[in-house]
Every structure is written in structure tokens, then in C-alpha cells.
Image 1 (cartoon, rainbow, N blue to C red):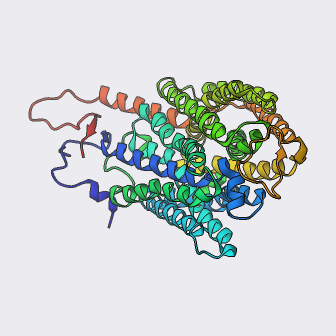
Image 2 (image 1 turned 120 degrees about the horizontal axis):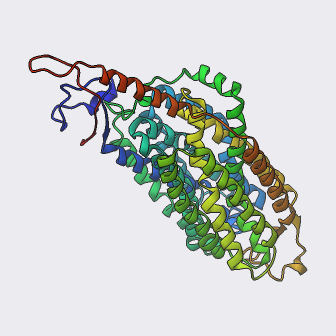
Image 3 (image 1 turned 180 degrees about the vertical axis):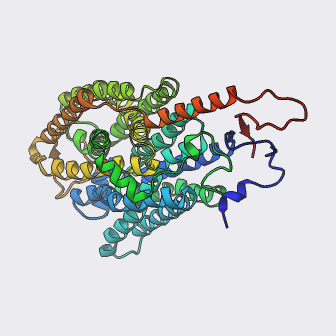
Length: 493
């Protein structure tokens, strides 16, 4: 049974008589699908970085070292690579509906297993394995959610709404990170509050599962919103081969992927970077992370509108890289200075405003660079590049941090409880290494990246052909049947 037929019920509010294959429509239900994907991304991101803002408390609760707690975030990056390959194939071959419902249930099941790991009565030896199992299952879901925005935007939204739709679905992931940064320190004031924190953070996962299971009826609308939406994507294997032969795309995948990796590293290690210098978990989560991602949300909204109206994808990303990395450099210089709360938070805000929009706009740029390769495939490889780079950066950076002696921890706010044998690390050298890599990536991208916009060029060509056809149609005469001209309408379903 074709699930798309569910969209074509009699009396759906608009007659199909007189419509041709050149008629395009959008459906109001697209906003519910976008909202579902946003809630899923928010929930999954909260699961991903639950423990980052309360790393020292979590290490005490689970009776393990800090590196193990960091691995709870790193497993998302590791599983994102093999699962990303499966996700790109499923989304572009089987469709959005199955992929989104599958990811929603994986996300919810992983969240519940994390709660079980913290329940009283669980054997201490089983706590760490259980929380890792929960994290890994939820991590399986992440590529489906992060690869879906470009596909959803292409299939359900018209040309001047695609970038905004993609931006909203993509920025939901950093928004979830922001909520984790806010809620984790608030909910887990001590190590004994870890179970309560995990339970509360399961609520969005449950809501998203219900929305996806009962609200996502089909992968694509009955009538496409644009000419490119009705064009068949290249087969998965052929598309993957095309990507790795496209030098422009490989440069884009490396540089935008590096931006994803830098953001992942910063949000994973930010509490550990700042707490030795007198900055509390609450300051890191409530002020720094919130400022960075809140500014990123605003910046992404502005960038989405700009690229929808002007189609200047390259210019927007180059400005974002340049100013975002510059702000990150200032943050790196002052991160180990005490009493610089305002400067640190403001620089993270500037980084967020200009740097975070590079990812959603970069996804649209990836589609433009590789069309007609499937949208999930082109954006998925960018994400997998970011995950691979993120794994390397997190492992390298945490390994080169230096232990601060106990008698030199006068300003440390790494935990409010007894640290025991858990070392407090000076992350200054790792931060400088991160800045060097960020600067290299920004310079290479700004100087060398150029590409034609293949999807826009194809749509422009279709429009010219249609205009020519209409101009050469015979004039309508009563009683003479002629083909209906191209139309566009919003369909109420």
C-alpha cells in the first residue's frame, strides 16, 4: 500500500480537476511535520549532552572517572558514522515517514534505559553499562533526525521557504543542547539528583514519539511544492560516488564538518574548560551555553531569511566563519582569566550568532553543490565528517589537558562536592590547539570555496521552459480544451 495515498482523501478541500503535472502546492500539514522534527532534535540533543554541564557530579554518582563521562557524549559521534550511512540510505530510499518514526522510538527507548541505570537497587557494576546502552541506542537515532531537515524542506516546502524550514529543524539540535545546559545544572544540584534529571529529560522524548507515530502519515505530499521536488534523486550508490568525485563538495564537507566538530567539542568540554577558573556549572549552562545557542537561534533565523530571499549561500557562510572564529579566538585568550564572566559570555554569544548558522546554511549549500544527489546523502556526509573530526578533537584535547595540583585550585568551581580522586584539568593548551584548527579551517574555506548552485539553476531552467510553453499556447476559446497553466496554491489538509 502506498502511504502517500493517505494524503489524497476525498473532500480534502481542493479539487484535483484541471491540475497538470506542472501545478505545485504546499500543505499546511508541513508545519506539524516540521514541529515534530524540531521536538525530536531537541530531545535527542538533550540526551546527547545531558552529562556535559554536570560532568563532575555525574562522575561521582556513577563512581567513575571524568574520561568515562566524556565518553557518554563521544559515543554519539562514533555511532553517528556507521549509523549515518544507514540513515542516508533509509531516508533517500525508503522515505521520511519510516525513518522518523524509527528514530523517535530509538530515542525514547534509549532515554528510558538511562533512567533505569540510575534507579536505586541497580547493581553498582551495572550502572555504567546501562547508561552507555541507553546513550548508544539514542545515538542510533541522531543521524535520522539531523539528516532529515534538508529532505523535509525539499519535499514539503516551496523554494522561498526551504532555507527557513531547514534552519528551524537544524537549529533545534543546538536548542536542545542549550536546554541541556540550562536544565542539567538546575535539576542536578548534587550527585543525588541525577535520577530526577534523567526522568525530566525523558518528557520531550515521549512527546516526540507520540507526535511522530500518530502524526506523520506520509513521506511526501501528493503534489510537490516545486519542480526540483518532483525530480528523482540519484540512486544511493551512484550518489555517494558522485559526492566523493566532487572536489568542491569534499572541501565543503571538511570545513562545515569542522564547524560542527568545534561546536560539539565546545559544548562537551565547556564546563571542564571554565570551572578551574572560578566559573560554576550554573554560569556555564545558564549563561554561556544559553547565550551562545540563543544568539545562534536568532542568527540562524536572520541567515535563513537572507538566503531564502537572496540565495547568497556562500557569502553568508563565509561571513559566519570569519566573525565566528574571530570571536572564538577572543574567548580562547580570556577563558583562563578570573572575573571575565561578561567578556566570555559575550564572545560565546558572537560565536553563536555568526557560527551556528553556518551548519543549516551549509546543508542547503551541500544540496546546491551536489544536485541531483539525494538531500539526506549530501547533508549526511557533512554531518559524518563533523562527527569524525569531533571524535578526534575530543580525544586529543582531553588527553593533553594538565592536572592542576590540589594546592593551586583556589578558584576552582568544578564541583560543589568532594572531588575525591577525580583530577581537575587545566584545558588551556587544548583550547589553543582548538583555536589553531578553527583558524586553519576558516582561512581555507574563505579563500578557496566556490561552487555553482545546481538545484537553483535547474529550477530556473524549468521555469524558463514553462514560460516558453505558456507563451506559445493557443489563445483560449470557448469550447476548445487547453491544458491548464502552471499554478501554485496552499492546500488545507
